[in-house]
Image 1 (cartoon, helix red, strand yellow):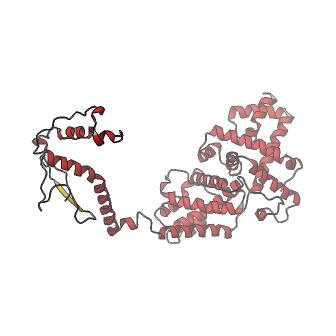
Image 2 (cartoon, chains in turn red, purple):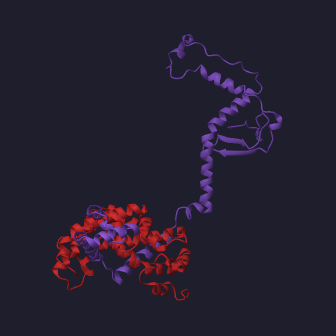
Image 3 (cartoon, one colour):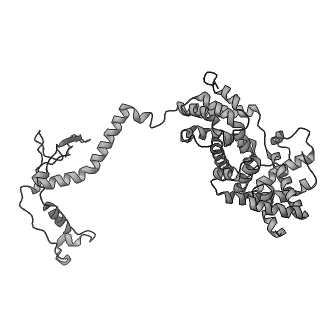
Length: 209
Length: 215
């Protein structure tokens, strides 16, 4: 794979899409090695390859577009500063997610509202992700899901987002959060019970988007 | 398995987070119990709604984040850091070293001057017998009126003890002596410091005929 002459962006284009899983996470290794040496193009390529996942995770954890963008910016600055400390046998995705979760935790503490921000009228610009012809009911449902996530404790929210939305295993989640797998399972179970209670009106009515 | 036992495990069962033995037991119960089966379906339905919470970021937003990061990195790299910049320049390094030396000398000099004075004064003099402080009641004059915070009678004892230190044997006196001279702000005061060797119990004379210590 020639990426030296074409620059990091070309390499990143080949790597776009979901981050590699645990097994082949270090297919980003060539970019990491070059970025460590101060290659700006390689670092930009690393960002292009991973920014989608970072932004998505930050958005899910913070529930606010602007906060998520700021968090992603902070994540990549931290990545740049600590890239030398990344060990090549480590899972880059787990390492990146750990930084993202920590940054979002700090951002959540700093922001006036601890959890994801939700609007009361359901018309905030963050709804750009929903289809344009979404019914009022489904918009309500989106609001309800965001509110339900916002009502969780930060640890429960991180655990459920990583487990049920990022679809990581309990073991991977525990490594990212620095908790025991049993603790993570307890947080996930508690979060599922709360979400099930809050979202019952919607799935009992058969709302699907 | 009872419904009560199963319900505690249903949140994890619905997400496939139970280990094999428990999964089999709960699955057997759920297959036979309509209420628990409905509960599992409810958990799964709630879980299926979670992706609705996701925000999507278009390419312009990604590019904005990327540009901010790269700008910040470029600004950081262009900014001279304290360690890599000013302090490592030879001129500033020399000034910092000289300052540190003067500071160290100013901290050490009070002790050195006193000790040097004792050595010069003690060498030709015969051994001083240990002084015994008199009882407090024997104080007279101004000494008796002074505040009893620190007895002045104890100070000669301490000096006498220092003067009676056993002399260092000549065999242990070796090594080159390094002479430091520091000119203070006062042109009449110069600190001369011999270090690294032993003077053999004698004060080293200054080549210019000045006494050891402060000139």
